[in-house]
Length: 122
Image 1 (cartoon, rainbow, N blue to C red):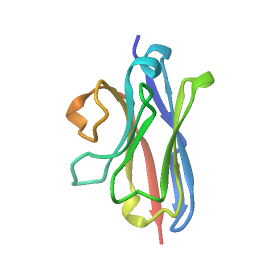
Image 2 (image 1 turned 60 degrees about the horizontal axis):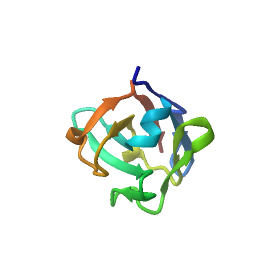
Image 3 (image 1 turned 135 degrees about the vertical axis):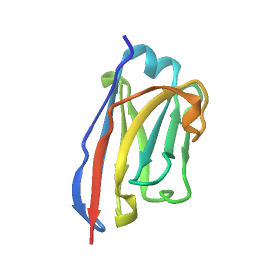
Image 4 (image 1 turned 90 degrees about the horizontal axis):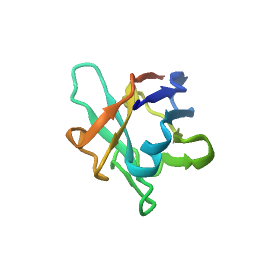
């Protein structure tokens, strides 16, 4: 069974930090690219970051580059998104997803978690 379970969302003031976790089935972490996406009210889902275990590549959107870091804990089959220097415009529901291509395009991902809310206030 394919499972992706996000956790770690919450409310934080601007400038603060949160770490999101995406617990995945073993085979997903081994064989798929894991991506983080977010969707704010009234906006389309957008790619934030992705990690390809096959070659260790990490990609970030311009809006989060330098502030967010994606990482993998092999022993726990968990992908993290460390979010620092958070801004109000980072407020959204964050999703992790598994796909076969290391892209920031949601349509390229086959499996999705349920999402976790991140709210950043001034």
